[in-house]
Length: 275
Image (tube, rainbow, N blue to C red; front, side):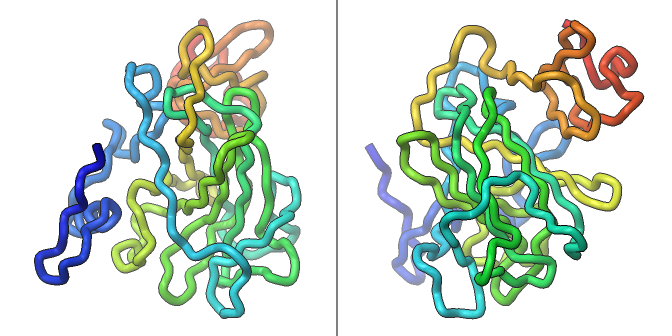
């Protein structure tokens, strides 16, 4: 049974879940957090015996391209690529990584993620495909995007656009947001449930977010949170819980980090645990 929406006593209009969340954030209430102080990710709830909360959609008026100066502007047929950064492109480097799950905690492979965004100056490229690209999740549901932090433009806070679609399932059109942005409290589309975890990384930033699609996705044998990371490689962002192999051994990441030469799993027990 779906509960009736509550109404604003002054206007008589329904009060949406998004409005309540925004009001709570504006009043200083916290969104779900981990003990580390970061936003809770879907992978942290996997394996607890209950369905995951589905990632909400953002009603951002996509559809056909509008003859307007502001976005968001979606264009089909973006190139297949994980790196959206062109040589010499201005802006703060940004990597975004995470996983795509079904409601029942199983990571989903071969899921389409189509990203598009404004550039450092807050402009969208409508003539070509700058800062646009699609990719598919790997086995284990992982994805990774290399881009720049989007700029601001009138009426909007910083955000990334994305369409997410599991094979044969409906498309989820949504946006990802940055914590601590002053415009988060005034943007009418902002939803705190779509906040990424973002931290500094050298001269850039690293963001993490897990999507949960409204599909069954049943877990396979074993722990559904055991997300295979393949062979350990330097320069990769590893989330806590990821598994890798190195020189014939199996290791689980115990602390999120970006790997580098010299930090091979046997050398840094604070980051990797032998299994």
